[in-house]
Image (cartoon, rainbow, N blue to C red):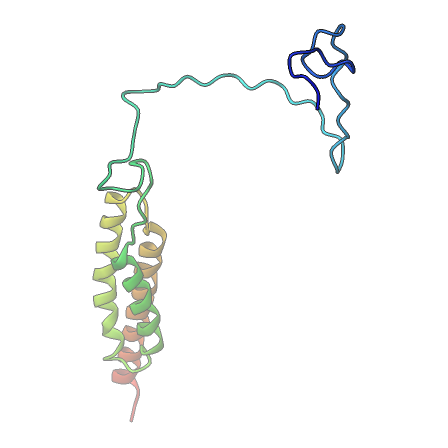
Length: 147
């Protein structure tokens, strides 16, 4: 057993046996050689206002957008498709009026939601208007045809 108070005759790590040598060479990492990355600028720890932190009763950070649906616009599109399919029977094509109301309501709701569902609401208005025109045409043909 060696004496811990005597210097290491082999120049062990941390002993005063001579100048320290270069650090040991690390093997290259696997894969392709990486290009040196430019230094990233430091981002400040502050922004506009106070830092946002999640509250214990609300587990999500406050800037997570919530998903909102425009159900009136979706209902307008669905009723529009059904009204076009049923417009050959003239009294069932009148359901386009209900779908038209949902389309207008969905368009108003889309302005409140920042545009969510606007395209669906316009599509529902077009489909329901088309269903009403087809239904009106079927009623005109039914009245004027000789039978």
